[in-house]
Length: 332
Image (cartoon, rainbow, N blue to C red; front, side, top):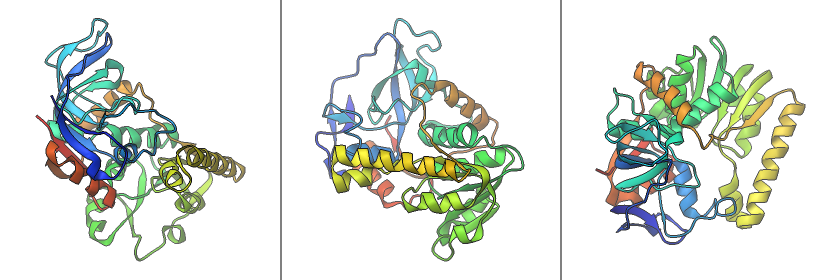
């Protein structure tokens, strides 16, 4: 099969499309024919080597953590799926590999594709959608009528989080550049702040919840807009930046320590900061998200669709930070 992979850590030009052996599914695995995948910021960080102190990948490594396609075979202990089922998934970070013609994924990490979405749209949904769901539903415990601040509303997570928050009945504030103001309003944002012109922490206060997807000094700024008892979901770890500065192991330790200190400090100030981690066995959560999508309340936003052979360009666009929604890879 064809697969997009890297044989060493580095910039986007280390990515290659090569012929490799088909995956062999285990007893609990589905073998999925990939119709589409998508690129997330974490894919770029894995390729750069920022995760190597936490997860030891055996290179060469096929990239990709989002997939939509059809089941072509099932393992002997699979009970919920059969060949021919249309599915989508975001496998555990320990087992990436969706930017390929075939991928094997544990059935616990798979859900049925929403019928109203095609494979390109469905591939844009899993990881960003799970992040938005875990942040707003699980971490922030968002309820109707509450006010929520969503950082970077035009991004892959932000576009889905705004729609999900409105579905949950919340009042949404977000940040974006001037070119995206009307766009994020069309998704449902009530208050939109152009971060080039205004400081969101000067304008917002008494928010019930926040989804912080930038990290660094933005964590502290976002904490100040929360009300007493407010809840904040932290999406990024700061590990890639620390690894680049201090090395794989020292950088990882420093980033984890800094985030732990921030969470303790937030608690001391009577706010709750939650490091949001999507559970590896996320199929049930993904199915709940699929039901919301099927209702029409949430629709993935696609910035561009590129062929598998342009995987390096797809990574570069994601790393630019200027995409509106997701970059999708057409595979089959």
